Length: 119
Image: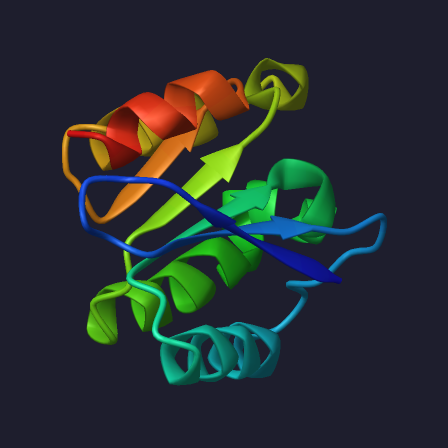
């Protein structure tokens, strides 16, 4: 796993780059949060490919459990990926509602994530 520091308006943002799945469990999210918080990061960008596919099946409740930790610890999270491939109305609704706020956002590419960082 590589952590890139991205430029933003006075906020230290981490882009997580890896070829492996990083977030599978609540414990994984707590480890990532702790690691990045200790390094002084204020926001996190992670790619959909680095999150267990079970996350995107809302019936597993993994998404809610993991995202609750990011909200609880006030660490904004941007997830970058192609979410249309999951063909789930409930997931699409979840993404739509999440994107109304500033804590958890789902975007299609890094340039869209960068726009959110600069707001």
